[in-house]
Image (cartoon, rainbow, N blue to C red; front, side, top):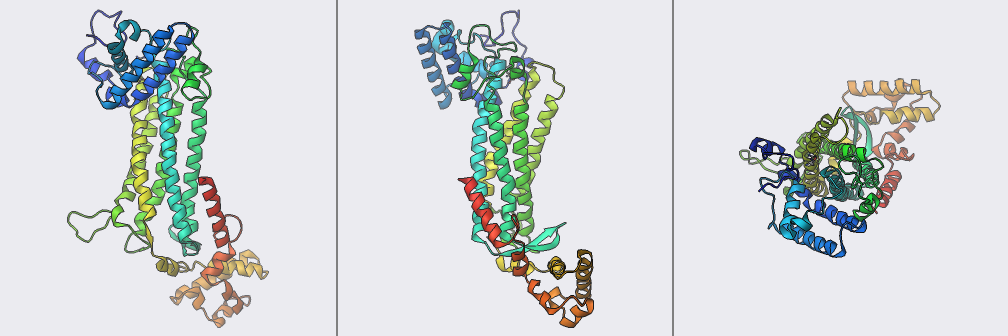
Length: 460
Ligand code: ARG
């Protein structure tokens, strides 16, 4: 027996090749609970419009509950002949309630407004879950920063030693982008919540006196779509979600890359916990940062999901086109990817051991205090242009003798410039350098402690 929702005008059923191409239940079945929630709201709005009796409504809601239980237990699953999740669930309802009652629910709705709505509810749920996981990752970074407050490390630009910074400052520099990602998810959610497409019908809206605002409120939206064509045809909400998840992937990949480098013999900044690292099948000594590498790799996949989706949407005419069925697999993959990646990544960060002595000893190396000499000279009244030259000369002399800036003798300093009195030594320490950068956002300990408090307040 044919289960398609559109048999009437066709003399023959669909070819097996068409069925195979058209079928989406192997990926859209995860929307079943959302489809059923939509059906409940739709039944109520049909009843309110006088299209279902009180008894019809009660029986329909009971049928939907029973079907939901069967879906949850696995007793009801899609048939090969079911084109999509909507088709399968209508079949299930008709099997439970008979065609007379089960066939009433489709009045005034189309799969086009259904799918546009269900996608929103599904992604809103997972935006909440991803936000929760992100908060966990931010908290792990904040805890590590808190635990190591006061430890100095080499700050880098161009991957070269630049200026000493606090390890906590560096770790929190990875936390703030994730906080902005949280904000992005919240902004996205408010935009999506404002426009429920249910009631848009196939494209032109509903003629049966159904109130889209009521369905919207029933499904947790704050408003309904102002334009039914837009309601069924737009997927910018999917693309925006894919962007935010790709951005999260990219932000995490930047942490990942540093962990990978820090975990090398040459850097020796960190040791990974055994539970969050992997071995080699041939080299017994290996302890690999696979979580960080998978994070780095999966960021490429998240970017691919976004660009693939944008390519699908480009130049698509209004209103619904079947192309739009291709919106699901990429974002479902983005959701699955982050929901499996973030817990592992958070565990890796939370259990990371930092080698603080090594970090501290490397902090001033590579002439990282040259800027402090220049700024000390400025405070002594020397124009910065000259101060920069003088400090650069100190580097040149020290480098030629294969020693550090603080190894220069008083005579050497004086011969470079008469401004370089022994008092300059007060800034030739990591502590002095870090402590002097005490404007808001700087690496001085007081400011980093301030950041920690700000972040903790954001996490609630
Ligand atoms: N399964 C479709 C999708 O995911 C929804 C059904 C709309 N199909 C249609 N022929 N109008 O976009």
